[in-house]
Image (cartoon, rainbow, N blue to C red; front, side, top):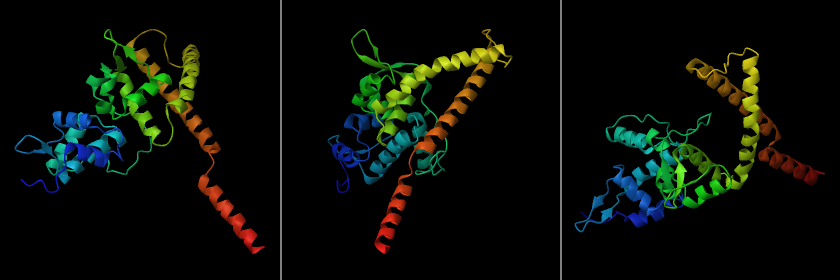
Length: 257
């Protein structure tokens, strides 16, 4: 096999780091161990990546970061592609109208994970996850051996926050949502009690039927309040294109007068 057109793992990481700053050699090796990548090997055992391998890695990173897909689902998508089948996920570039918490492996959700595994699990750097903890967005747990652990239930939230970072909205900006959540949670709790007492169908007894009605009412309340919040923000955010257009019109009027 000739080495022409093949890249070492270091060169692959350097090539893609501009688009995926958190990519590291250890993450690429982890993807190899999980069976998502299978680069060629030299007689001496070094791995070499073809252009096809690089494109495959780009696909993995895209689906993980922009579609929030867990590695198990990404692996299924790659296997479908290898078999010549149509992908089950949206095509790159398509945006969902509604953003929900990303899907995550059930096994990951139910465990505590060392913070140094965050780059390979969610594609976010350790320093970024620490910043989220400092802002109160997530809470780290200290192991008996002194290691910082991340609750698996926080992994989807970390993915969302990591994408927001690319719009210039960082952990410090998200602090206001932590404050709002702490304040509004009591409002929701009180509203549900009042709703139940008025015969709204939310029983205070701890039964399966009552929990189902509780969840339905709570979900509806969240949806309605989110819609109100989104509408209020949308009305107050200035349209930058409108400002540019009006400025251009004023300049044109000034030159013609």
